[in-house]
Length: 388
Ligand code: PLP
Image (cartoon, rainbow, N blue to C red):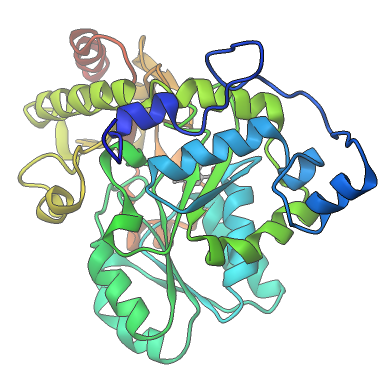
């Protein structure tokens, strides 16, 4: 085989261990602890002379280690840590690397915003927020001191695109590290570490899991940078469960075919919605007239399965559309095989005051769509009947 197998091959074979019974993939080690032949053998693992299985909360469990090797290979990272959720991964990253201050660029998931704006400052961690239209202030903000720049691209729910290379260069010039939440794109469409970022974080609950049936998170990066995160994960107890790790590995083996189909369907839905008389605008990075299209084209190999439509009319009109869906389910998550629809004003951005939503460009008439694996004609028909 060539030295670096392609992404689909890595999804199937990356990190897999073969057991003595001939299982074609890593079995589920549903155990909390592992026994040793002698105290000397145990001390080899405890004192780090040998990599081995020890205790599941530490991540020293073969199913979890196997998953982490696969996750690392997907993002072209040296290493990966798996977590019990995307928020657990972010929290451990911020606690390990955010103490010199965190700059959050652009809009971010509501839980991330709450952690950054309300909880970390209580621990004395300074956090700063720069919306996309204030990006030219990044360098002056970095000059005042910050250890970590964090952003999503594409963002939720406006699908705003940030230039990973440019932001990474600016941050590194000022001694800050860069973490990209790659949840919306998935490693099939975008690999931020290859564009200069230091960390990639995922809510594996979304595309990586892909079936709306597991909650998990992942953090990828270099070995030395991930090192300090390990103790936070261990002592916060935010380890992925072995059975979740097993299910996530099963999902990852089909990640490229799911995401490629979702890319194609989302593009077709975006094009259909662009022509609909009741739709004011369609936010999708794959559309040539989308503001971030050129940057997206440069750093993404596909534009993802997420799009947002902003309909003509009022909040009540948008609610009526959503309530008429028959195939799209009203649900706040994304990335699964079933298509989901949500109004950011009722879910992800519900807690924000109206002025803050307006400042972020979140309207009362936005409907965010997570495109699943149904036939594109059925999804378009559902949107058309709901739009009336
Ligand atoms: N990042 C993004 C972009 C998300 O959409 C979410 C959840 O919706 C998270 C992180 C948090 O992930 P989790 O729900 O797995 O903790």
